[in-house]
Structures are given as C-alpha cells and as structure tokens.
Image (cartoon, rainbow, N blue to C red; front, side, top):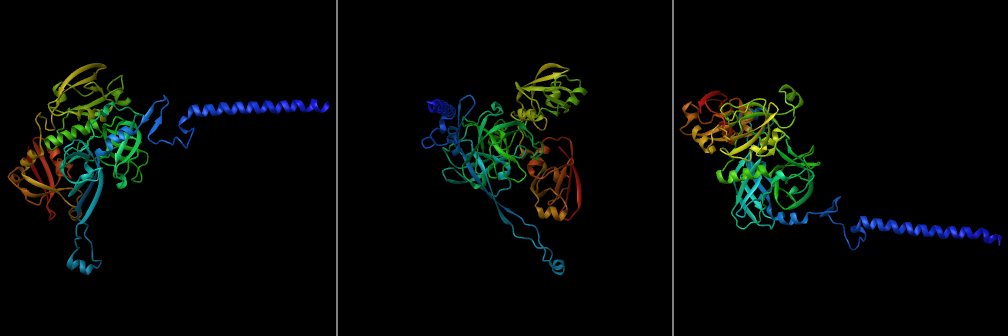
Length: 483
C-alpha cells in the first residue's frame, strides 16, 4: 500500500506530461503549416523563385512579365578596328633612322543588349554599346541573326537607335516610368557576360538619381536606381514593370570592380521614348530648353532668397532671349511643377523638360516671394528659336567634314581631344582660312571630342565664335567665325 501511494503520483505526472507535450507539438505544427503552406511538403511543392508572398498576402508573380518581354530583348555584338599605339625597336640607333613603327589596326569586339521597340525592326540601346562600331550584329532570342545599321545616337542621354531589316518582330511597349514607385518590383533583361536572355528581379531603390557618369555636353541624368543584378553585357537592355512594359534602359552600375555590387541605373522611359522617337523621325534629338540656370534649393540658398518652403528647384539665372525670360521668370523664383508633375531637384526638372520638343507649350508652377503663380511657357530650341534643328545645317554652315582623331595623333601632338578637318567645302571655316588637316580642339573654350558634340555646342551659339586648334605639324591656330 505504501508503495502504491508513492508510485501513483509519479505515474499520473508522467501521463500528464505526455498529454501536454502531444498537445503543444500539435499546435506548433498547425502554426507552422498556417504560416508556410508552400513548404509543408517539400516533395510535392518545390521552392518557387518566380513569386514572393508579400506582407499583405498578395502574390507577386514575375512569370507574366518575363514571358511577355524576354523575346523583345536582343544581343548586340559590335566590331571595330582600332589603331594601336606606336612601338619602339628598343634600340635608339634603329629608332633614330627608322622611327617608331605603327602597329596594324586590331579588331575590337564588344557586346551589349538592345530592346525591340517596333515590329519593323527599330531597336533601342545605349550609345556606349554601339559608339564607334564598324559592324553591328543583332541576335534575337530565337537565334536569328541580322546586320544592323545605326539610325542615330544621343550622347547626352547615352541612348542610340539601330535598325534591322525584319518584320513582325516581338517588341516591348513603352510604359510610364513616372508612375513607378520606390519599392516597386522591376525586372532587368539582358545578356550579361554573353549569357543570353538573362532575367533578374529587384525593386526601385530611388528615382531621379544623378551619378555624374555622362561626360557629354548638356548631359541629362535622371536615372532609375534598382537593386536588380546588372553586369557587363546588360547595357542597353530592358527594365520592365510587372505588366511587361518598358520603364527604363539599363545603363550603368555602381561598382568598385566593374561587376554588380548592389545597385544599377536605368534611363527612364520618359526620356528614352522621346529620344527614340526623335531619332527615328529626325535622325537626332530635338532638345527643348527653358532658358534658365538652376540649382538645388538648400537651406542656405532658401535663407539667402528668403524662401520659406524648401520644395522645388531654384532659378539661379535666366538666359537672355530665352523662353523663361519671355514669360517673366527671374532669379530667385522656384519651379515647383511642370505640367502638373512635381519637381524637387535639378535632375527631375531636366527630365520633365527633356520630354518636350521646341515650340511645345508647358504649364509651370512657380513659387515667387512665397506665393504660387502659374505660367504657360513656349519652349525654344538650343539656338533660341522654335524650328527643328538638324546637325546637317551646322555642317553646311561650317563647310567641312570632320572626324575624331585617334590616340596616336593625340599623343604625337600632346593633346587629349580634337576633330580633324578631312575635307573643306564652301563655308565659314574656308572663309576664315582654315586648311584641310586642321584639328579643332576647343570652341569658345569648350573641349570637343566628337562631331556630335561640336554640332550640339554650335547649335546653342550665335554671333562670334572662337575656334582653337592645331595643325599636324604642331602649328597652333585660332579662328573667329560668325554664326
């Protein structure tokens, strides 16, 4: 009896403990299954890389956008012949009599991506992908190969349009990049490291980002920043939203090594679409300008100009005879909106104005003396007029065919840039005594590297223009022409 009195409580304790353990284990299993139904049975439901469950329980599916757009991105392959540096025999005696020897030009291959934007073969890509290419080859996702020709390019936005002779091609429709929100999912499609049709996913990390990567005259940088993996070969590829619409052109990465390190940057479709349409229609971009010098509105500047609200873009100066002067804008005004779109940085203002052509009218909301005022302004071209401007007009005025000089010429003359006059016709240069072979290095103290840069610079100037340069024999010369 005494033994039973001792064992009975122990027995009941063990039974109670087992019941509590079983009940707790059952509840834990139910909770895990309710929160992770996808992984309850690993044999029957595999992991999915194409979708994610958000905190609201909605499924973000990447497969629709991927399937709709992957065939609209192409592999762009380029070849060019580049002159090689001169080399020495290594023996001063031979060098004295025979001089340094010129190496034979060597073929240089390049690779990037492109976006089909029309079924008849127009393809949008980066300017740096096709710049100076002698041959451009396009490989479609179905492995068909075409030779492409350059339609036009715009160094200011690092965009270019090429064309292949084909019909009924799959193309990606333009979307509205201004509707993108920070945190929204996007897909990057391209050919990194020659890996065809590679798709990566990420979110929009920031908008209207200026990374100071474009060195062209009047460069426009208002990049979409994402964390979608982009590597060499992705340049010129598509950034699409989950509807399968083109919202950006992948252009650059932030990296210490040259490979993806967390952030990539794309030209927004709001800029890319207008540039592409201009190139297709006119052969070059028709850039509209407001005629103001702008600055970011800082606390210090706000105090200086007695501005209470730190929103908008400060007008630091107004161009004489420009569109802004026409409507009475002045230094110290703050631009808040362009056609109803808020602008809070110089990049955002440049992006909005770049969407329009000369002679377009836009509504401007301005903060003047801490009061809001609406203005309607008619944008002008780079020359201050309203008409369409073509580089060919500038070529005719100069009367010269120009080409960029190679590295050998730069090294021999001790210069870093220049455009050589290879053929003279009747025009301003010939009138001022310029001879064939002359190398233009600066115009109004601005360096020029490509014919496009020179044409764009001259299109903004009027009156007297100072041209500096050097002849192949080392003679430095200056010429003044009137435009």
